[in-house]
Image 1 (cartoon, rainbow, N blue to C red):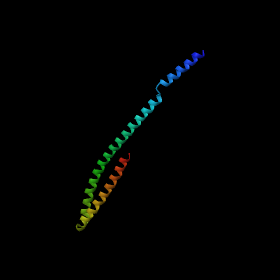
Image 2: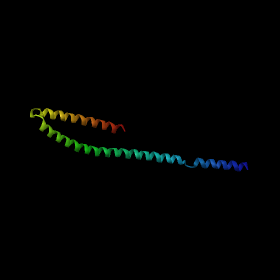
Image 3: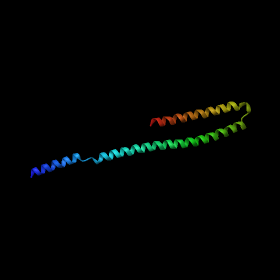
Image 4: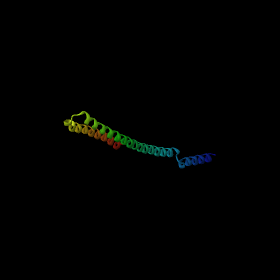
Length: 109
């Protein structure tokens, strides 16, 4: 009887070694799901960025045109050119700062 017990034990151990580990499949699937989620999150970030850039472009254009009209109305003619130059410089610096921050954020990931 001990021979039967020993052979049954050996057969059971061999079956356990040859059977695939279900946890390994779950780990692989979980990793693929996480990679997919990360990729989708990145695409969503780009889509949101594109939408916000379009909105910002429209708002910036309207702001620029209305501010130019206000400068023409409220500032004396001899000071209009320097005032417009200062306004454009502030807008340019702000846009450069925003672009730099966004590029750092996108290249960091």
